[in-house]
Length: 119
Image 1: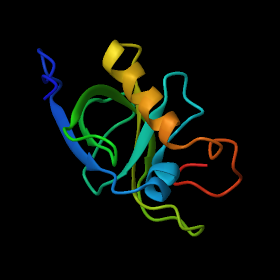
Image 2 (image 1 turned 120 degrees about the horizontal axis):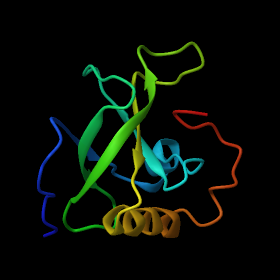
Image 3 (image 1 turned 30 degrees about the vertical axis):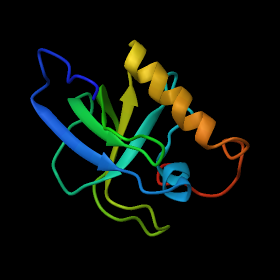
């Protein structure tokens, strides 16, 4: 199991992504180091640091990532985007590994025009 980081942020979020279609809708490839959108009604502010406990379809154990809030949908939108937050990955080794894992799971889909939860 990967170890949780020391000096933990004040907020934590568990995110389980069950399959590739949900991963595609949640992944934010347009961010420098990648990121994920999570449906939540919890209150966050732009820039908040969040410890993300992430479960992906190909992982047997969660990955713990330090993220920052870069996107907020405060309520469901008319075009079907759910309420939640977008979390940017950092430049640390764990985040870079998770970005690689996600992009390996989504070959060819990253240039797709299908809607996502953010864009």
